Length: 253
Ligand SMILES: [Zn+2]
Image (cartoon, rainbow, N blue to C red; front, side, top):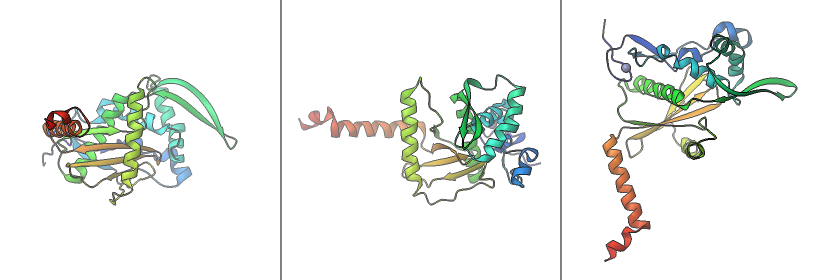
């Protein structure tokens, strides 16, 4: 048997990991009657070590429950919320940190909604894993570099600056994305699709992840090393100071 390396750390892999996690894709028994098709064909897998297999860390269930129940998702996510998510939550009552629950009415139909305190750290780990998995899948090598996750999903009342940053950055990326001209991929786009931007001049590209046709998460992948990023930052701040700040005077003397 050929030994494969983990999509994340390049250690020896001993299992295959679904990207994104398989549980995100509705089970036939829950949706076949309504949609008359399966959403579990042609799922992406990459080789993984134990440490980087999300299924083993139970993070994939948290991701599924958090993402499916969002307002603004498509009907598939809604059915998933009433079936699979409901089963998960009955099995594990502590899965979600629920602040409040309510029912909203749209056109005489009732929709249960939950206000959930999202664990950003858990979600970030999942999104990082998905981004690294897709990078490996597309490039047949693991990603080396720095990775930043941006999403409007991360709004926290106790972190107004972070929320503002995520909203503003998402909006900028959404505008840039209209000019990417790259393929939107995914065999089951009702559940998940993704798109890589072209590389920019700074060895950087953005990956757009979309869940249930409602949630966008952007992952900025830069192949610059941490040192190169620091150098670029200090060059930029030097330029800023030179153009707009106190350095100007010193150079005039
Ligand atoms: Zn690994």
